[in-house]
Picture 1 (cartoon, rainbow, N blue to C red):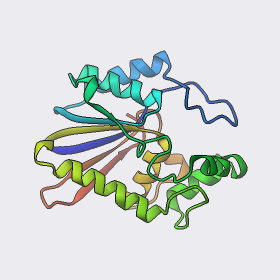
Picture 2: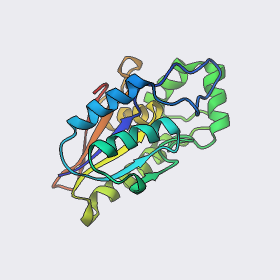
Picture 3: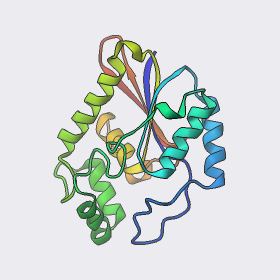
Picture 4: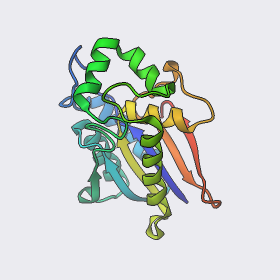
Length: 197
């Protein structure tokens, strides 16, 4: 089995309007939900990576604890957040959400072909990120399960652009929603999206 779970962090409090919320951490319910989710994971976790934002680190550490994965081996990657693989300039991208509204920008992430200011070219960014996934799964020592903890924007953008049909805003990932990526024997990647756990 060579699988990767790209998962949104667990529940956090509402983020105040016009705030990025990088310092917002998990709620107690979020911690409990992550523990429950972590217990449902089957297969040996062989690698973990997380956004450097604290709520993602917390989610990763709970999953690691429940699955016997050493905390010190959890890698932190800006591809998964702060800013994330689809964002070139966090400040300019944030201005898009502030001026256009979340629904407009999020819909753009799900289905547009042209990137808004501050965002990476979608095709280039998604292909590069999928390359990272494929490389991780193809490694000889990678037999097992890889867990990458990220944010809704990264998860939704990748899921929408790898599944047969684009996601809609109604399909936007809930807390602990995830995309399961499997390296098939043919060498192809297959994708299964779960909006919530």
